[in-house]
Image (cartoon, rainbow, N blue to C red; front, side, top):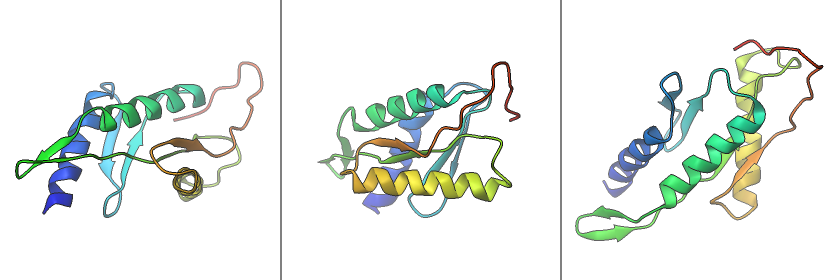
Length: 123
């Protein structure tokens, strides 16, 4: 029960960091996914760090007990080499594993593919 309540509170905190067009969804048991349209790779990393800080900013209360929570975040961006959404999800999962291996409560990303000057990425 505590885990469910904590996930709900984390979701609320994450939602406070997002913009109008951003999309937050549950992606498995205790995983959340955030889609940030029209955001470049550095902007995505900045958003992920804001989310990480917001979640860890203060303890949560459950049944009159303070519970500390942190998140590990894996960031993936849309790039030319992706053949499907599954490829992007796989890249995000690899980055998430890297964050967990780095000690948790951090943000990691897969390789950021350079774009040619003026090249746009479709979202």
